[in-house]
Length: 354
Image (cartoon, rainbow, N blue to C red; front, side, top):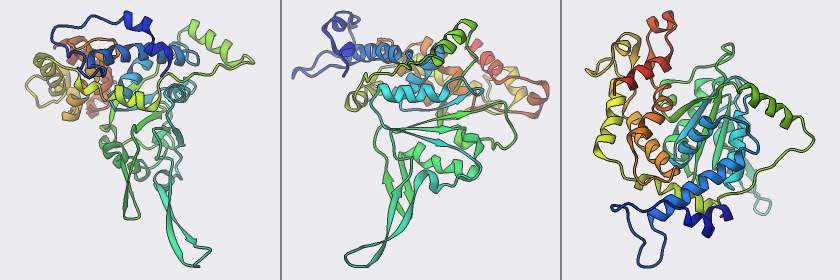
Protein backbone atom coordinates (compact mmCIF):
# COMPACT_ATOMS: atom_id res chain seq x y z
CA UNK A 1 0.00 0.00 0.00
CA UNK A 2 1.21 3.48 -0.76
CA UNK A 3 2.83 5.43 2.05
CA UNK A 4 0.19 8.15 1.70
CA UNK A 5 -2.38 5.71 3.00
CA UNK A 6 -0.53 4.08 5.90
CA UNK A 7 1.79 6.74 7.28
CA UNK A 8 1.79 7.79 10.94
CA UNK A 9 1.04 11.31 9.83
CA UNK A 10 -2.21 10.16 8.27
CA UNK A 11 -3.11 8.22 11.41
CA UNK A 12 -2.84 11.39 13.48
CA UNK A 13 -5.40 13.06 11.24
CA UNK A 14 -8.04 10.35 11.59
CA UNK A 15 -11.44 11.49 12.81
CA UNK A 16 -12.29 10.72 16.41
CA UNK A 17 -14.19 7.51 17.05
CA UNK A 18 -17.87 7.91 17.96
CA UNK A 19 -19.17 6.19 21.10
CA UNK A 20 -21.09 3.56 19.12
CA UNK A 21 -18.25 2.75 16.71
CA UNK A 22 -16.42 -0.59 17.05
CA UNK A 23 -13.18 -0.50 18.99
CA UNK A 24 -9.80 -1.96 18.09
CA UNK A 25 -9.79 -5.74 18.40
CA UNK A 26 -7.91 -7.36 21.28
CA UNK A 27 -5.56 -9.29 18.98
CA UNK A 28 -4.20 -6.06 17.50
CA UNK A 29 -5.93 -6.29 14.13
CA UNK A 30 -7.27 -3.14 12.54
CA UNK A 31 -10.73 -2.12 13.70
CA UNK A 32 -13.42 -0.99 11.30
CA UNK A 33 -12.89 2.54 12.60
CA UNK A 34 -9.27 2.45 11.51
CA UNK A 35 -10.25 1.03 8.14
CA UNK A 36 -12.70 3.89 7.57
CA UNK A 37 -9.90 6.38 8.17
CA UNK A 38 -7.67 4.30 5.90
CA UNK A 39 -10.31 4.33 3.17
CA UNK A 40 -10.70 8.11 3.42
CA UNK A 41 -6.95 8.53 3.07
CA UNK A 42 -6.92 6.10 0.14
CA UNK A 43 -9.64 8.15 -1.54
CA UNK A 44 -7.51 11.29 -1.38
CA UNK A 45 -4.49 9.41 -2.72
CA UNK A 46 -6.46 7.84 -5.58
CA UNK A 47 -7.98 11.17 -6.61
CA UNK A 48 -4.54 12.81 -6.53
CA UNK A 49 -3.19 10.16 -8.92
CA UNK A 50 -6.23 10.21 -11.24
CA UNK A 51 -6.01 14.01 -11.38
CA UNK A 52 -2.57 13.65 -12.94
CA UNK A 53 -4.33 12.43 -16.08
CA UNK A 54 -7.85 13.86 -15.73
CA UNK A 55 -8.69 17.57 -15.53
CA UNK A 56 -11.85 18.58 -13.64
CA UNK A 57 -14.80 16.14 -13.57
CA UNK A 58 -14.79 16.07 -9.76
CA UNK A 59 -18.35 14.73 -9.45
CA UNK A 60 -17.71 12.05 -12.07
CA UNK A 61 -14.61 10.84 -10.21
CA UNK A 62 -16.49 10.87 -6.92
CA UNK A 63 -19.31 8.70 -8.28
CA UNK A 64 -16.83 6.36 -9.92
CA UNK A 65 -15.09 5.77 -6.58
CA UNK A 66 -18.41 5.23 -4.83
CA UNK A 67 -19.42 2.59 -7.38
CA UNK A 68 -15.98 1.00 -7.18
CA UNK A 69 -16.00 0.48 -3.41
CA UNK A 70 -19.72 -0.42 -3.33
CA UNK A 71 -19.09 -3.23 -5.85
CA UNK A 72 -21.36 -1.54 -8.36
CA UNK A 73 -21.14 -1.29 -12.14
CA UNK A 74 -21.22 2.10 -13.82
CA UNK A 75 -22.56 3.45 -17.12
CA UNK A 76 -20.82 6.62 -18.33
CA UNK A 77 -22.78 8.75 -20.76
CA UNK A 78 -21.14 11.62 -22.60
CA UNK A 79 -20.11 12.88 -26.01
CA UNK A 80 -16.83 11.64 -27.53
CA UNK A 81 -13.57 13.12 -26.33
CA UNK A 82 -14.44 13.67 -22.66
CA UNK A 83 -11.81 11.20 -21.38
CA UNK A 84 -14.29 8.57 -20.19
CA UNK A 85 -11.98 5.76 -21.28
CA UNK A 86 -8.89 7.49 -19.91
CA UNK A 87 -10.55 7.98 -16.53
CA UNK A 88 -11.40 4.31 -16.10
CA UNK A 89 -7.96 3.21 -17.30
CA UNK A 90 -6.25 5.61 -14.88
CA UNK A 91 -8.33 4.25 -12.01
CA UNK A 92 -7.28 0.68 -12.76
CA UNK A 93 -3.62 1.71 -12.79
CA UNK A 94 -3.86 3.31 -9.35
CA UNK A 95 -5.32 0.12 -7.85
CA UNK A 96 -2.97 -2.42 -9.42
CA UNK A 97 -5.94 -4.25 -10.93
CA UNK A 98 -6.10 -6.03 -14.26
CA UNK A 99 -8.25 -4.28 -16.83
CA UNK A 100 -9.48 -5.15 -20.31
CA UNK A 101 -11.16 -3.01 -22.91
CA UNK A 102 -13.77 -4.19 -25.41
CA UNK A 103 -14.70 -1.96 -28.32
CA UNK A 104 -18.34 -2.82 -28.96
CA UNK A 105 -19.22 -2.97 -32.66
CA UNK A 106 -22.27 -4.28 -34.59
CA UNK A 107 -20.44 -7.47 -35.59
CA UNK A 108 -19.23 -8.33 -32.07
CA UNK A 109 -20.35 -11.81 -30.97
CA UNK A 110 -21.08 -13.04 -27.41
CA UNK A 111 -18.13 -15.44 -27.60
CA UNK A 112 -15.85 -12.47 -28.31
CA UNK A 113 -16.68 -11.32 -24.77
CA UNK A 114 -16.98 -14.49 -22.72
CA UNK A 115 -14.57 -16.75 -24.61
CA UNK A 116 -14.92 -19.82 -26.80
CA UNK A 117 -14.01 -23.51 -27.03
CA UNK A 118 -11.25 -24.34 -29.50
CA UNK A 119 -10.43 -27.80 -30.81
CA UNK A 120 -6.84 -28.80 -30.25
CA UNK A 121 -4.83 -31.97 -30.70
CA UNK A 122 -2.57 -33.45 -28.02
CA UNK A 123 0.86 -33.82 -29.71
CA UNK A 124 1.73 -36.88 -27.59
CA UNK A 125 -1.47 -38.94 -27.83
CA UNK A 126 -2.94 -37.49 -31.01
CA UNK A 127 -6.31 -37.15 -29.30
CA UNK A 128 -8.43 -34.12 -29.94
CA UNK A 129 -10.18 -32.16 -27.25
CA UNK A 130 -11.87 -28.85 -26.67
CA UNK A 131 -10.11 -26.22 -24.62
CA UNK A 132 -11.84 -23.10 -23.33
CA UNK A 133 -10.05 -19.88 -24.26
CA UNK A 134 -11.08 -17.14 -21.86
CA UNK A 135 -12.39 -13.90 -23.27
CA UNK A 136 -11.72 -10.35 -22.09
CA UNK A 137 -14.52 -10.61 -19.50
CA UNK A 138 -12.03 -12.46 -17.27
CA UNK A 139 -10.48 -9.41 -15.64
CA UNK A 140 -10.96 -7.12 -12.66
CA UNK A 141 -12.16 -3.98 -14.43
CA UNK A 142 -13.86 -4.39 -17.79
CA UNK A 143 -14.23 -1.29 -19.92
CA UNK A 144 -17.15 -1.80 -22.31
CA UNK A 145 -16.56 1.02 -24.77
CA UNK A 146 -19.63 2.28 -26.67
CA UNK A 147 -21.73 -0.58 -25.35
CA UNK A 148 -24.81 0.54 -27.29
CA UNK A 149 -23.14 -0.13 -30.66
CA UNK A 150 -23.68 -3.88 -30.44
CA UNK A 151 -26.98 -5.82 -30.75
CA UNK A 152 -28.90 -6.88 -27.63
CA UNK A 153 -27.80 -10.51 -28.06
CA UNK A 154 -24.20 -9.49 -27.51
CA UNK A 155 -25.06 -6.97 -24.80
CA UNK A 156 -26.77 -9.79 -22.91
CA UNK A 157 -23.46 -11.68 -22.76
CA UNK A 158 -22.51 -9.34 -19.92
CA UNK A 159 -25.68 -9.91 -17.88
CA UNK A 160 -24.55 -13.07 -16.08
CA UNK A 161 -21.11 -11.71 -15.31
CA UNK A 162 -22.55 -8.45 -13.94
CA UNK A 163 -25.18 -10.17 -11.81
CA UNK A 164 -23.36 -13.30 -10.62
CA UNK A 165 -19.63 -12.67 -11.23
CA UNK A 166 -19.43 -15.84 -13.30
CA UNK A 167 -19.59 -16.92 -16.93
CA UNK A 168 -21.21 -19.99 -18.47
CA UNK A 169 -19.78 -21.22 -21.76
CA UNK A 170 -19.81 -24.65 -23.39
CA UNK A 171 -21.86 -26.08 -20.54
CA UNK A 172 -19.26 -25.07 -17.95
CA UNK A 173 -19.49 -22.25 -15.41
CA UNK A 174 -16.38 -20.24 -14.62
CA UNK A 175 -16.10 -17.94 -11.62
CA UNK A 176 -14.64 -14.47 -12.11
CA UNK A 177 -11.88 -13.35 -9.76
CA UNK A 178 -12.74 -10.57 -7.33
CA UNK A 179 -13.07 -7.71 -7.81
CA UNK A 180 -15.12 -7.75 -11.00
CA UNK A 181 -16.57 -4.47 -12.18
CA UNK A 182 -18.01 -3.36 -15.51
CA UNK A 183 -17.69 0.29 -16.50
CA UNK A 184 -19.41 0.98 -19.79
CA UNK A 185 -19.44 4.10 -21.95
CA UNK A 186 -22.24 5.30 -24.16
CA UNK A 187 -22.49 8.10 -26.70
CA UNK A 188 -25.84 9.91 -26.31
CA UNK A 189 -25.84 11.91 -29.53
CA UNK A 190 -25.42 9.29 -32.26
CA UNK A 191 -28.49 7.15 -32.97
CA UNK A 192 -27.58 5.58 -36.31
CA UNK A 193 -26.02 2.16 -35.83
CA UNK A 194 -26.82 2.00 -32.11
CA UNK A 195 -28.99 -0.34 -30.09
CA UNK A 196 -30.61 1.01 -26.91
CA UNK A 197 -29.75 -1.02 -23.83
CA UNK A 198 -32.68 -3.12 -22.56
CA UNK A 199 -34.14 -2.06 -19.21
CA UNK A 200 -32.96 -5.32 -17.63
CA UNK A 201 -29.39 -4.52 -18.63
CA UNK A 202 -29.62 -0.91 -17.50
CA UNK A 203 -30.86 -2.02 -14.09
CA UNK A 204 -27.64 -3.98 -13.59
CA UNK A 205 -25.70 -0.72 -13.53
CA UNK A 206 -25.59 0.83 -10.09
CA UNK A 207 -25.06 4.33 -11.49
CA UNK A 208 -25.55 6.20 -14.73
CA UNK A 209 -22.88 8.88 -14.58
CA UNK A 210 -23.34 11.78 -16.97
CA UNK A 211 -20.01 13.24 -18.10
CA UNK A 212 -20.39 16.95 -18.94
CA UNK A 213 -18.28 19.22 -21.10
CA UNK A 214 -15.29 20.72 -19.24
CA UNK A 215 -15.19 24.37 -18.24
CA UNK A 216 -13.18 26.78 -20.37
CA UNK A 217 -10.25 26.78 -17.94
CA UNK A 218 -10.31 22.99 -17.65
CA UNK A 219 -10.41 22.60 -21.42
CA UNK A 220 -7.40 24.89 -21.75
CA UNK A 221 -5.50 22.76 -19.24
CA UNK A 222 -6.54 19.60 -21.11
CA UNK A 223 -5.11 21.00 -24.32
CA UNK A 224 -1.86 21.93 -22.60
CA UNK A 225 -1.40 18.50 -21.06
CA UNK A 226 -2.37 16.36 -24.03
CA UNK A 227 -0.27 18.29 -26.53
CA UNK A 228 2.90 18.26 -24.41
CA UNK A 229 5.82 15.98 -25.17
CA UNK A 230 5.75 14.28 -21.76
CA UNK A 231 2.66 12.37 -20.65
CA UNK A 232 2.23 11.89 -16.90
CA UNK A 233 1.71 8.36 -15.56
CA UNK A 234 -0.16 7.32 -12.44
CA UNK A 235 1.28 5.40 -9.51
CA UNK A 236 -0.18 2.50 -7.58
CA UNK A 237 -2.06 3.55 -4.43
CA UNK A 238 -3.63 0.25 -3.31
CA UNK A 239 -2.69 -3.34 -3.99
CA UNK A 240 -5.45 -5.80 -4.81
CA UNK A 241 -5.58 -7.38 -1.30
CA UNK A 242 -5.71 -3.94 0.33
CA UNK A 243 -8.45 -2.85 -2.05
CA UNK A 244 -10.56 -5.95 -1.38
CA UNK A 245 -10.22 -5.41 2.37
CA UNK A 246 -11.48 -1.84 2.11
CA UNK A 247 -14.21 -2.82 -0.33
CA UNK A 248 -15.49 -5.38 2.17
CA UNK A 249 -15.77 -2.60 4.74
CA UNK A 250 -18.59 -0.74 2.96
CA UNK A 251 -21.49 -3.11 3.81
CA UNK A 252 -20.50 -2.86 7.49
CA UNK A 253 -21.13 0.90 7.60
CA UNK A 254 -24.23 1.44 9.77
CA UNK A 255 -27.28 3.27 8.51
CA UNK A 256 -30.10 4.61 10.66
CA UNK A 257 -33.60 3.33 10.06
CA UNK A 258 -34.93 6.73 8.99
CA UNK A 259 -32.12 7.06 6.41
CA UNK A 260 -32.86 3.60 4.99
CA UNK A 261 -36.55 4.54 4.86
CA UNK A 262 -35.60 7.63 2.87
CA UNK A 263 -33.92 5.42 0.26
CA UNK A 264 -37.01 3.25 -0.04
CA UNK A 265 -39.28 6.31 -0.16
CA UNK A 266 -37.28 7.82 -3.04
CA UNK A 267 -37.40 4.60 -5.06
CA UNK A 268 -41.14 4.17 -4.47
CA UNK A 269 -41.82 7.80 -5.39
CA UNK A 270 -40.42 7.09 -8.86
CA UNK A 271 -43.25 4.64 -9.59
CA UNK A 272 -46.32 6.26 -11.17
CA UNK A 273 -48.70 3.93 -9.34
CA UNK A 274 -47.34 4.84 -5.91
CA UNK A 275 -49.31 7.13 -3.61
CA UNK A 276 -46.17 9.13 -2.87
CA UNK A 277 -45.30 9.78 -6.51
CA UNK A 278 -45.25 13.45 -7.61
CA UNK A 279 -47.74 14.50 -10.25
CA UNK A 280 -44.93 14.84 -12.80
CA UNK A 281 -43.99 11.21 -12.28
CA UNK A 282 -47.58 10.02 -12.67
CA UNK A 283 -47.86 11.99 -15.92
CA UNK A 284 -44.51 11.34 -17.57
CA UNK A 285 -43.17 8.01 -16.22
CA UNK A 286 -44.38 4.65 -17.50
CA UNK A 287 -42.30 2.48 -15.16
CA UNK A 288 -40.28 3.54 -12.11
CA UNK A 289 -37.27 2.12 -10.32
CA UNK A 290 -37.41 -1.34 -8.73
CA UNK A 291 -36.05 -2.58 -5.39
CA UNK A 292 -32.54 -2.74 -6.82
CA UNK A 293 -32.59 1.07 -6.81
CA UNK A 294 -33.28 1.10 -3.06
CA UNK A 295 -30.34 -1.24 -2.55
CA UNK A 296 -28.09 0.94 -4.71
CA UNK A 297 -29.11 4.06 -2.76
CA UNK A 298 -28.17 2.47 0.56
CA UNK A 299 -24.90 0.92 -0.64
CA UNK A 300 -23.95 4.12 -2.44
CA UNK A 301 -24.66 6.15 0.69
CA UNK A 302 -22.55 3.79 2.80
CA UNK A 303 -19.64 3.96 0.35
CA UNK A 304 -19.83 7.75 0.16
CA UNK A 305 -19.82 8.08 3.94
CA UNK A 306 -16.82 5.77 4.33
CA UNK A 307 -14.90 7.48 1.53
CA UNK A 308 -15.32 10.77 3.41
CA UNK A 309 -14.17 9.25 6.70
CA UNK A 310 -17.58 9.05 8.35
CA UNK A 311 -18.82 6.07 10.33
CA UNK A 312 -22.49 6.12 9.35
CA UNK A 313 -24.49 6.86 6.20
CA UNK A 314 -26.58 10.00 6.44
CA UNK A 315 -29.43 11.68 4.60
CA UNK A 316 -27.05 13.82 2.54
CA UNK A 317 -25.34 10.69 1.21
CA UNK A 318 -28.65 9.27 -0.06
CA UNK A 319 -29.55 12.53 -1.79
CA UNK A 320 -26.06 12.86 -3.32
CA UNK A 321 -26.17 9.50 -5.12
CA UNK A 322 -29.90 9.49 -5.94
CA UNK A 323 -29.71 11.13 -9.41
CA UNK A 324 -27.09 8.64 -10.63
CA UNK A 325 -29.13 5.74 -9.21
CA UNK A 326 -32.49 6.76 -10.68
CA UNK A 327 -31.91 8.43 -14.06
CA UNK A 328 -31.41 5.22 -16.05
CA UNK A 329 -34.15 3.31 -14.22
CA UNK A 330 -37.08 5.55 -15.16
CA UNK A 331 -38.91 4.57 -18.35
CA UNK A 332 -40.47 7.74 -19.74
CA UNK A 333 -43.84 7.81 -21.45
CA UNK A 334 -44.48 8.95 -25.01
CA UNK A 335 -45.89 12.18 -23.62
CA UNK A 336 -42.61 12.89 -21.84
CA UNK A 337 -40.65 12.39 -25.06
CA UNK A 338 -43.10 14.55 -26.99
CA UNK A 339 -42.86 17.37 -24.43
CA UNK A 340 -39.09 17.11 -24.17
CA UNK A 341 -39.25 16.32 -20.45
CA UNK A 342 -35.79 15.49 -19.10
CA UNK A 343 -35.36 12.54 -16.74
CA UNK A 344 -33.13 14.59 -14.42
CA UNK A 345 -35.97 17.10 -13.98
CA UNK A 346 -38.25 14.26 -12.89
CA UNK A 347 -35.63 12.98 -10.47
CA UNK A 348 -35.27 16.49 -9.05
CA UNK A 349 -39.03 16.69 -8.46
CA UNK A 350 -38.88 13.40 -6.57
CA UNK A 351 -36.03 14.56 -4.34
CA UNK A 352 -37.62 17.93 -3.61
CA UNK A 353 -40.55 16.20 -1.95
CA UNK A 354 -38.45 14.03 0.38
